[in-house]
Image (cartoon, rainbow, N blue to C red; front, side):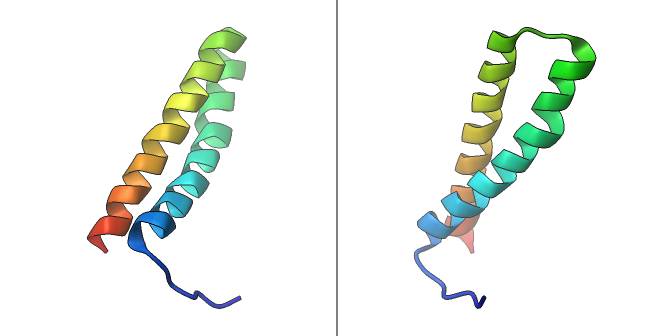
Length: 64
């Protein structure tokens, strides 16, 4: 599959969403299991990580 390019903001958001999903799986679920935090805090942390990395991806997309 070849990279077709596109608007920086959209591609950055896509990249950030992928990194955000990785962060949720790698860090949030790990914290939930090891620190025994509740489901509500786990959900809120997952949303925060996902939104944070999506915004970071958008900024990266705008810069590059």
